[in-house]
Image (tube, rainbow, N blue to C red; front, side):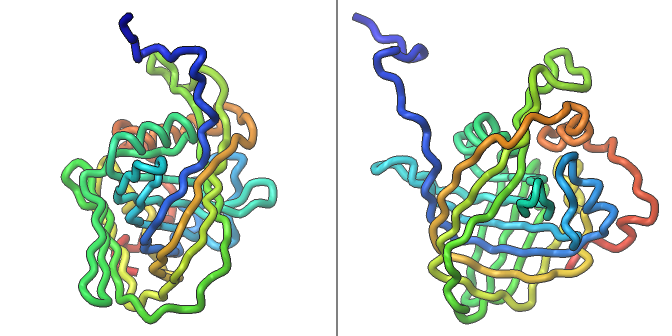
Length: 274
């Protein structure tokens, strides 16, 4: 008897997929940008935070997929501080990371705007730390600083990140085939160590594929190095009108990023070191 593995045996239904348990080392930074840019980045019904802050995390992640399988990747998350119905979090602007497996699963299941990164490195030289993210031959994001002595171990906490599940129209026109859902990622943090990072730098470089340079660094609020465990899960919050997302969905693809809006008086400062 032959076996056809493209079709699942209905008598062998898989159990529901749980959230992933991960071990992480991460460099975390929060910086202030231009308020007009900050607000324009957020699709409705997300509301801008009172402070125009951008969150970036670059992590070495060991994902414990099963008792016998662990997948280790370099990954970055860029988020825009916001809120939805009283819950504060970040709208995920970009998620470059290593590996097809995590990109496909994150995009299809959670609606994360993941893209495959060619470079996602974290280097340590004593207390000096530097991370680099690159795609299409361009290292468009670098962060660096000096790791200080461990601060007080934080209590476990949960961070929230907002994404969208949506299918662009098959004919290539604006809009979607089917409903558009606002989703929320729930990342439960249990850090064993948290360090402040002195001399923080965030360097953004021009890239037509990842134009983070359009979101300039006006002031670095804080940079930290964290080590510990993370459990990730997600949920659908609500269905939203398609027009809320139509001018933002192109960010998860590598075309059409030169059609950005003009904001009078915004973004006049250089997007370089904070």
